[in-house]
Length: 177
Ligand code: 5GP
Ligand code: MG
Image 1 (cartoon, rainbow, N blue to C red):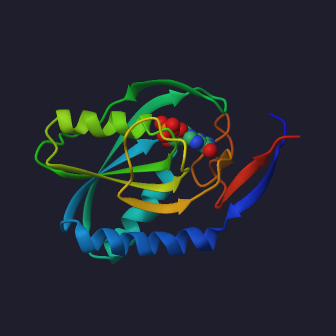
Image 2: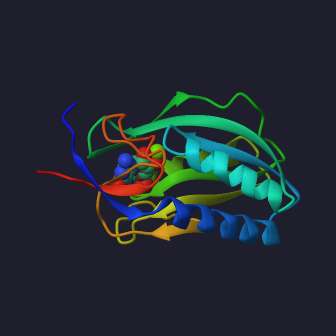
């Protein structure tokens, strides 16, 4: 694909510092053993760093992955949420922490939370690396938020544009020529 220009918004160092603080916040409130439900693909990098920070905060985790789709490959949401790849583990009776890359309309997280409640999770909390305020369409808030960002399309640190840019160690804004 053509090369867009990505303007850094949140640096690698800011991300890692914030994740250490988030893990401390989580450790203050969560039980000592929690199950992570990581929403793919966007949250794989955040999840990998967060569970290591949680380990340093003395929280044990089990990790499972759930792939939901609402976006296509472009920059606009299609609205409807589907299960693309389901969890492999049971969630009943467990304290779940859903980990997602970004909370925008809230439809993805609303769907995930309802699914986990239906399957008998004891408690479901949510952490997101990023949130865009003022865009909510579902009644949902995250319990632990990394950064609140302006209403711009961002990439990097797991977030993509057409499946590119996930490898960037920072979060940036795609400049459209
Ligand atoms: P929501 O369901 O809250 O509207 O959207 C959440 C999902 O949309 C995120 O998990 C992410 O995959 C995608 N998304 C929302 N905003 C952005 C953005 O600025 N950049 C990227 N790459 N994905 C986004
Ligand atoms: Mg996502």
